[in-house]
Image 1 (tube, rainbow, N blue to C red):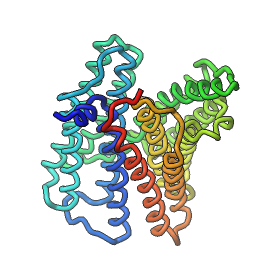
Image 2 (cartoon, rainbow, N blue to C red):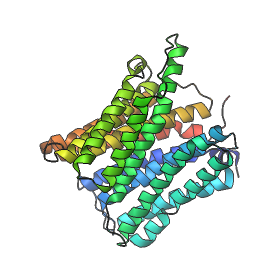
Image 3 (cartoon, helix red, strand yellow):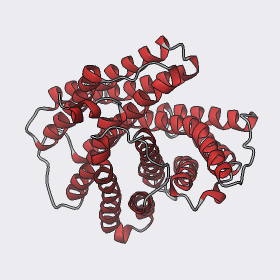
Amino acid sequence: MSSSIQTFFSYGFRPFFSFAALFAGVSILVWVAEFTGMAGSGGELDALTWHAHEMMFGYLAGVVAGFTLTAVANWTGRPPVSGALLVLLFLLWLAGRIAMALALTGYLALAPAVLIDILFIPAFAATFAREVIAGGNKRNLVVVAAVSVFGLANILFCLNALALFDNDYWIRLGLGTVAVLIALIGGRIIPAFTKNWLAARGLARQMPEMDLIDKAALALTVLGALLWTVLPDAPMTALALVLAGAGLALRLSRWQGLKTLREPLIGALHLAYALLATSLVLIGLSVWQPSLVPSSSGLHLLSAGAIGLMTCVVMTRALLGHTGRPLTSSPLTATALLLIAGGALLRATAPWMPGFYVSLVGVSGALWSLGFLLFAGYFAPMVLRSRIS
């Protein structure tokens, strides 16, 4: 195995971040072509279901794997997951993406496609759980649990696709689980990164400790996600989601985000958390008044906005930090973040302007895709090279 390949499979972030970003950019262009009528699929899997599934269990699962398999080494003090095991996990992820694409185009039946796709998350979750348990890292067992629930959502998709269990729980369970993960992990890293950035510029300020506000906001987010999964039309679901969004916004207001606008890698984290809070409020309002608030606005503010922006920032910081580069944005990474945020906001706005809906979806998808393709191209050389310091 060449030194570049050995380096590529030395840490989880290298293969998973680079290919997940490339996949995000390309797959959105495929979806836009399908949606606007420029291309057709012809397989057993319809384009909308493929798009929703692949953004969650393709792109996002890859990012979560890259992040956790890299971070768990720091959390536990154990060697990173690397070599043959990492190669196997990456190939399982890649096989799932190929299988689902073949099911979309009609070159593979849906049943074998979903059976191939379903292999990755359990294998990755088991590897991650083993590392956490072996390292005695009890604090992050909650992350193991969240990843396991995310895998359950994909199993529900598989059962639905194979007509073994008619359900639409999978998409809400998947998105709700990731919303909880962002609320939890974002609540750890955003104040910490902000404090460090301010301190480096002589603007040190104390960040609030975990208190009743934080715990209540997280509890409401978990409750809202659970109710949304099983009772998507209930008034109590609407109330829980709106309160959860308000609680997360209150948390965010205490982290001094306005002082970080000069550094996109910090400011974008605050924006992503704000989009998370706003998306929960919008989803809650759409449950309460579906005729006034389009459900897709909140869904895309959560998926393309909060999830897309948060994952891109986290990937950027991890790639820069683990390859020995300063944790500051370049003009290109700042542009990529701006394109992703702009595309997400435009996509969330589109349902409010029905006369321009198709055009806005097309433009928003192109912007979002370009952001991820810029990201993938910028970091491609770095993931093949050893750490520079």
